[in-house]
Image 1 (cartoon, rainbow, N blue to C red):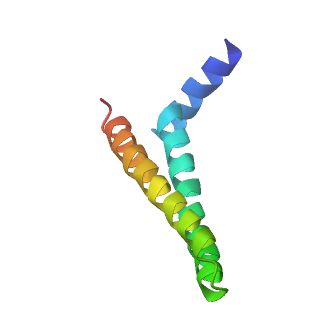
Image 2 (cartoon, helix red, strand yellow; image 1 turned 30 degrees about the vertical axis):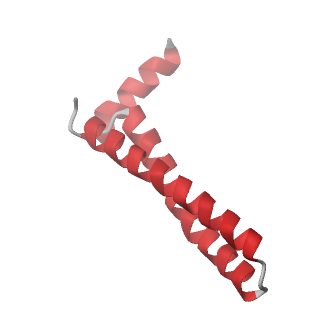
Image 3 (cartoon, helix red, strand yellow; image 1 turned 120 degrees about the vertical axis):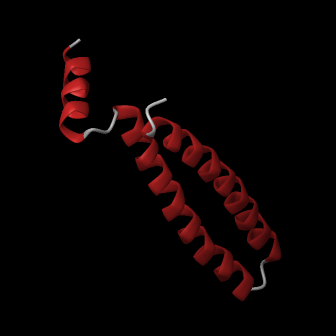
Length: 81
């Protein structure tokens, strides 16, 4: 109960719901991960490891799909619906 009150107070101060904040944090982490994986993919390409390069590409593709889904949920929560 106290935790719920704290979340409501935070919403009142920031104007952003707790779930919208959570979505923003996960989205930010995914975007940083995509950028990091690009470096790892390039390392694999540079060393001629096509299997690892393909793995990193698949992970990036999956993460981009997650980013698209996160973004649409975030927009919905920021619009208050």
